[in-house]
Length: 386
Image (cartoon, rainbow, N blue to C red; front, side, top):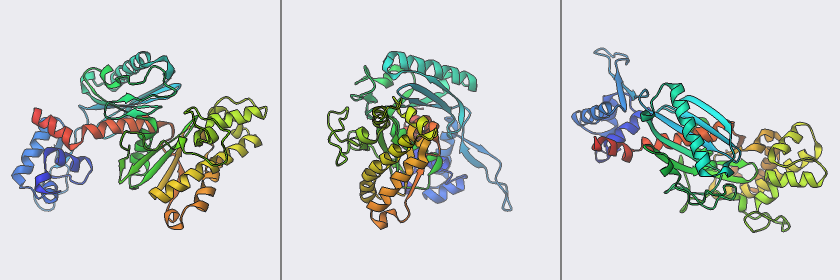
């Protein structure tokens, strides 16, 4: 960091990352004069963003005062909207969970019904945490479909009737709202909570459909229009008879998704309507279900092998409904990836089940909100406005 970039927002970034815990640390890292650092820090303290305590160890003189984020007067929410559920997590500014809840809720009921439910749950969780609504600074929402991230509007989501181009952020008054695809926020939640040291990560959600969240150089990669990672519609050779909801055939989702496996099990005379039914059959030891899940893993691995050669990730995380039988799914994935990818690309590659599990999307959506709020540009805006 150069003196020219040492704004209040940049100073807060160093404090929130733990890179600087004293004013002396900030002066050393930024190269700014101590008087300038004091101005920046005092402004952040005045706005309730930073607090300073006398808890440092003395090196002979007066103990240095320690800087840290002020957590008490801020709250953020992460909302995970699935096809049949709503999970909400209330976080403090450091990402610690203050309260959380989960309800059954059909996304197909439409934005007015679903968002009204979310709004009520936000009020309830804030009450539980003893924080007034005015302390809610930002909300992140993950939805099961493509989103134009810049506007927060869903874009022709196949399983979200009535949501296309709906202005989700405008529904919530008095708080900033960010909306993203669910697998993107899952990738963010998994990276920040379990693999923060990995610069390049792929999070693959295997549920009814298949999607991928991409972390490159520690940041979410959404692509030009926000559709990066839609691997469920990459063609799988030899499956021209597998029609996909997108109108094409032989898409990975139509071959190896939870719904596709359930249909094949039904054709074999087994009762299966969803990925959850597939999981139940596998957990019951059904050999047909075991075979099809491992076969699906091989098909997913075929697509991932190409991504490994192209993107060279350090970690591939497998999440979603079918990850609950990850020992069988990952066996098929690993078999194909390690066989078809370049040795250099797989030398240090880890393919692992999700560590954050069902909380990945809600936590990731909350982190999305926090990181937006703490971004240098936003902090500078807050400080300058005050």
